[in-house]
Length: 435
Ligand SMILES: Cc1cc2nc3c(=O)[nH]c(=O)nc-3n(C[C@H](O)[C@H](O)[C@H](O)COP(=O)(O)OP(=O)(O)OC[C@H]3O[C@@H](n4cnc5c(N)ncnc54)[C@H](O)[C@@H]3O)c2cc1C
Image (cartoon, rainbow, N blue to C red; front, side):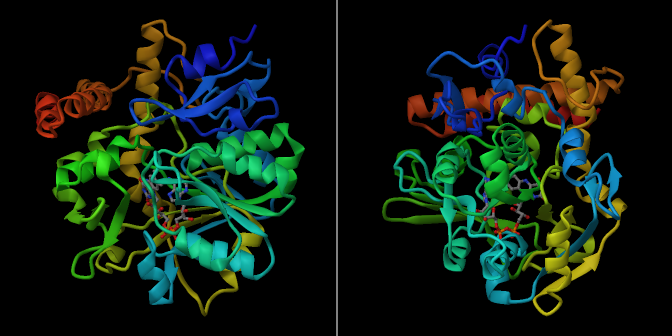
C-alpha cells in the first residue's frame, strides 16, 4: 500500500513547496512558509490515495517518461541524458538593448512570453512577480499584458509556491504560458496528467535552468550582511549587471525601509552558490538541471566566448516546434548562434556532477541509513573517490548548518554568529578540496 505524501515526501524533507498538491480539488494540503523560510506542504485533511501522482518528488513518473509523452514522437527530436529530449539548442540574446539590460541574462524568457502574447498564442503568463503579501517579497502571479510581463522579468532566487496562481487558472478559461524551475514544470506536467483542465489551459511552458532553489534566508542573509536587517527588507535584486565587468560577475541590491545597499555578489559570505547555503533538501535529490519537461529551457551561457559581454547571453534548449518556429522567425529581434552538446556539458558540468554522481551517492547514504527516499533516474552507488564522497557529505552538512547558523544569528540578532557558526564547516570543506 502507498504510504502517501505526508509520510514520505513531506515528513522526510523532500517537499519543495511547489503547491501542486494544494491545487487539487478538495486538496488535503496547503502551503505555508516554515521557520526556515522554506515553502512546505502542510496537511489540512485526510490525504486522497493518488496524491503522490502529482508530486515532483514522489518518484511516480520521471522526467524521461513525461518528456517522451510530450515530445518523443516529434520529427527531428534528439535525446541525450543531460538535456533530455530536444529539437535544437543555441546561445543568444535579444537585440534590443533596453530589453536585454532589464533582464537577468539576456531576456529571452521575457521576449518569448511577450511575443506569444503579441501573436495571440496565449492569453496570460503564470510567472513570478513582486508580492503584495508582507511576508513574501515575490510570488507567482498572472500577467496579461506585455508591460506586466516586462515588470516580472529577472530571476528571483526565492521560495515560491504556485497553488494560488493555479486556482486562478481553474476559474479563468484562458490559454496560459507557465514559467518555472524544473521541479515546478514537472509538477505542472503531473497535474496535467491528472486534471484535464490544466492540460487544456496551460498550453505552453518555459523552464529555467536551476542550480538549486533557496529559502528566503538567502535574501535575508545577503541583505543583513550588506546592512539591511531581515525585518526591514522590502525588495531584493538578485542579479544586477555591471557594464565594466564580465557577465558572470554581478551585483545584488537589498532595499530596506528607507535605504538601499549594493554589493558584488561574489564579495558576500552568504552568496557562494557552490557552498549551497539555504538549499532545499529536495534539490540534492533532483536529477533534472535543464527542465527536461518544458517546451523551451533558458539559462545563462557563461561560456568563455560570451562572458566578456556584460549584457549577458542565454542558453536556449528548444523542445516544442511552435517555440522553435517563433525563435527561427525572429532573426530581426534575436541573435542566436549554434552551440554544441560539449558547450552545454561544459557550462553545467558542476551541476550535472552534483545531480548525477552526487544524487547517486546521497541515495546510497539514505539506503544505508534505512530511510525512505524518492526513486530517481540514477541508481544508488558509492563507487566514487574518497575525496568526492567527502565533498558530497560536507555539502549535506553545509546545507543543514547554514539553516542552524542563521536561526542562531536571528535569535541573537547578530549576523556575525552566522559566519562564526559556519566557519569550521567551510574550513573543512575547503581542506577536502586540497586533498
Ligand atoms: C532558483 C534559480 C536557480 C537558477 N540557477 C541557474 C543555474 O544554476 N545556471 C543557469 O544557467 N541558470 C540558472 N538560473 C536561471 C537564470 O538565473 C536566468 O533566470 C535565466 O538565464 C533566464 O534569464 P532571462 O534573462 O531570459 O530571464 P528574464 O527575461 O529575466 O525572465 C525571468 C522569468 O522567470 C520568472 N522567474 C523569476 N524567478 C523565478 C523563480 N524563482 N521561479 C519561477 N520563475 C521565476 C520571472 O517572473 C520571469 O518571467 C536559475 C534561476 C532560478 C530562479
